[in-house]
Amino acid sequence: PESWSPRPENPGYLEGNMIEGPDGEIYDLLRFNSRPYPGNKAVLLRFDVAQNVLSFDSFVDLPGGHSKFVVRRDKVTGYYLTLANPNTNESYIDQRNILKLYASKDLREWREVVTLLEDDTGFAPDDSVRFTGFHYVDWRIDGNDILYVVRTAYRG
Picture 1: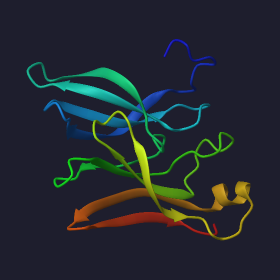
Picture 2 (picture 1 turned 60 degrees about the vertical axis):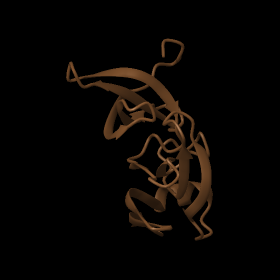
Picture 3 (picture 1 turned 180 degrees about the vertical axis):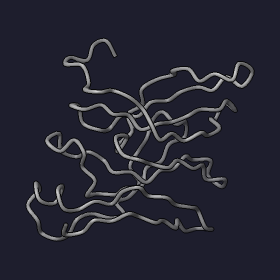
């Protein structure tokens, strides 16, 4: 947004999730490089099927929007779900030492459901962020369970 001052360093979006929205339209929800701002934003693009064009829709407040995330829709509840690394401390822009499940009805408003993984090493916050990471998560819904695979760095 024009109101951001200072401007983000190397802003950009990448590693998207093409998904059907609740309105039947196709969207791409992407991680957003928002440095120096905390990484809890994502970018939502709308796909125009007739024109074969993606266009900007909105910025989305999505905890963990700075890291790779996967969005899937639960066929039973209709909720969109993601496992993401929230930025809980503005001092740690690339924080990945916590993994949480988030849910949304509309791809725009996300709420925390549960913490899945967090650093329990006893490290000081600086070291925890530096030596612990739960990232590049992929996952599937399997009945009443969520099966997930996590690239993990633990204790360095």
